[in-house]
Amino acid sequence: MLDWLEFFPFALWNLWINRNNKNFNNDKQDLSLSLVITRAQEFKLLTYNHSSPTNKKSIKVKWHKPRQGVYKFNTDGAYKGNDKIGGLDGIIRNSTGDWIVGFQEHTHVLNHTYAELLALKQGLQLAHERKLKPLEVETDSVEVVNAPARDPEHQAQFSLSKFSSPSLGNRKYQACLFQHSSET
Image (spheres, helix red, strand yellow):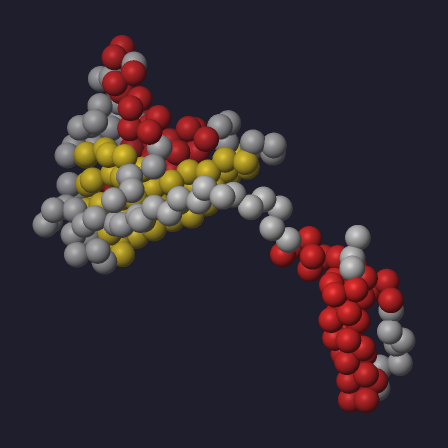
């Protein structure tokens, strides 16, 4: 429900727009009350603070350069569960922080970890194609970083120092350090 203080500015604004359209554009449309109400309600819904958390916590996040001569690959995957839509992105920079190559893609994924792994795979493929090594990989996915430690049986296939994939030509990716990005 709109109160007068929410409705009045939109009524004046729409009255002014309508007047200018009639005077300068020869527009013959009359002012629509339902349009004014719709715009005011939309504004209220989009700007209304639905939750007011009292315990806000700010964290500082800072990108750390890799050692001299090392490339750094930052990756992230996102997942929207209802329709299984995922987002993959990543960027590879050199040791001075200059952008070398990046990617962004929307795709279908099974879950959040799958999205993170697809983003990792795509970035490693880019690094492999461009011969960007040694490579330091940084992700915000604890699951991806800890996967080898949780599953010793498959640790040789997903080593922290080597990465093998059929799409990488079944070559091991040497000198690859995985780490979790955290607050500073």
